[in-house]
Length: 194
Image 1: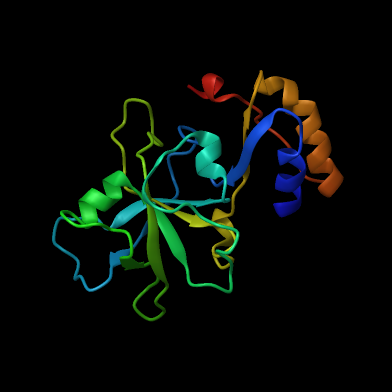
Image 2: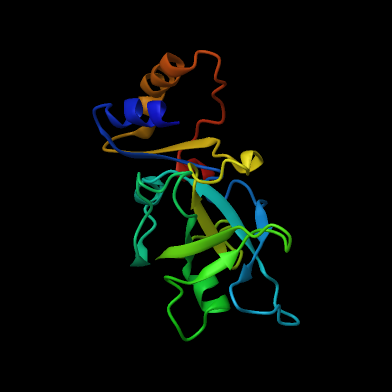
């Protein structure tokens, strides 16, 4: 991931690049249960949110604004405490009337807690469909959750200064320079996805 991002970001005309487990509107799955710290489950309230692992520049690349707190940093690694960015919907739904930044939630089961500290709140994105309501969403730095290999980022996203399709050959060359056996498929613009 790091080598590909470094190479792709250095291409002339690439403004930003990032990885994600799913580009908005492409995959409607990938949710995970959680429980806010110090709270017992409330009847009728589903403790479930979209679960995405992303690289540091993913939000900038896609154009998702930060409402509070901070974005992920290179310093958020497997050796540091787990951090998360949640969307506005998740913040309002599970921490109403207070700031969610600095709060923790548990991703693990009762026998093995996996605590995540919220470091940022991102703007809502319609992940599930253009006409679907926004769902609670949590993002994690891909470097921190090595135990969640089945959710690893699989989509490379780019923001460019000109027609993004003109970068396909150059990006493909940079990926193959790192891993010549890496399959590359489903190359599309966000306009095509919409």
